[in-house]
Length: 233
Image (cartoon, rainbow, N blue to C red):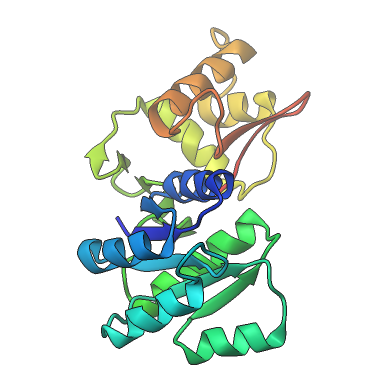
């Protein structure tokens, strides 16, 4: 599990960053000021640092400068409300690896985080990806192996019934497209007489309970009102 240190003094922003990064399967710690951030960077050895420039007492530029003087080559993604080119240039000269200007989109930030982790070879087991041969899919902290018909979450085996597994694969195969209840009934249950549309809802609920971090607020197995369900990586 990649470890990410967020150095950010805005409590609301720090909470949002931590929440979204943890949903993606990362281990996250937060430091509210530059000095604390330096201590945690040195002691915890994160795989990536998300660093705000506008910090009290010790700003992000000086934090970054000290990190590099210490010989730490940890990838650093800078966050700042500043959009002046000179700030960006200084950040890169001090050793920043990427730069995002506030306000930013969560999906953009997550994509940049994953790109930096891949580039650094720090491990991206939590990235939402499919294997080249289509046999496995990783989303959040869950890994689905189609060939072995196994599912793990945070490295632990998750017991799915045969129909639950087939339903999950049916959603994955659509690559984000909506599947109606009738389509799922036909594909997974073959329109068996004893099966009713409520069966799909029940199995979806079980999948969410087993695979989603927050089953009541799912981020992968989504309901499309008056249409059906779809899967989002």
